[in-house]
Length: 234
Image 1 (cartoon, one colour):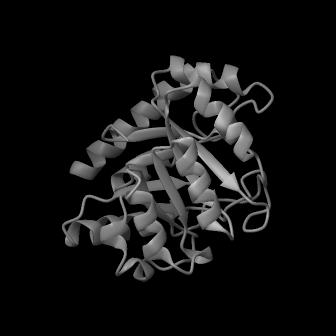
Image 2 (cartoon, one colour; image 1 turned 180 degrees about the vertical axis):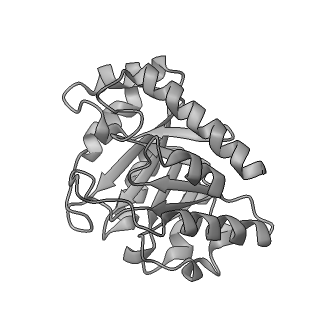
Image 3 (cartoon, rainbow, N blue to C red; image 1 turned 45 degrees about the horizontal axis):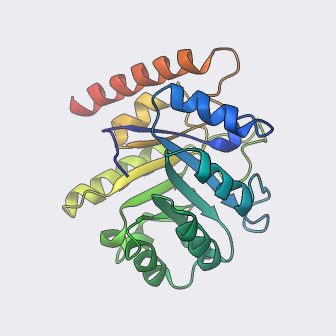
């Protein structure tokens, strides 16, 4: 996946699910090259927005990079399905995986970027031995699957966890990417970027905010990113 310094990854589940191709074309028109796709089994997380067949059809209509986030209790099955479809990045959850090392290597040997996702309360200490294998670490900033619940907010320690992971990566001389997901709002972006995030999953609180057009939201996102980068350099 060819990442910019900071990558905006629109979450397709926040688009118009009845008009997916129209939504894809709108995202492409904005010059965005990566699409974030949640693959949810309805068990690990109480949601199931897209099926495998739908993702296959999306692959046929766009050349965008697919950033796939698997939320499942059977990660290997979905990883193999996504590899067959032809995606560019796969993250799966630490909490539901017995053989983490094996699955990271399975993804990487197929030429796809591999990442590990952590629920909000999962400690960064659990990355100790596998961090060098990770192209990306995704930090969930709210409990996965509850985005539709407007009362569910980003955890209080979100910014600190991103900061701690960024320091851990730099201290170990790695170039692992930090992806953040969960209420990555226009207001939160400067602090998250300052803390070290470089892949932003864009949803209903940023790129898809209904009171403005996608173009207007993207401009504000880019301004928020620039603000965060300036803060990071200070």
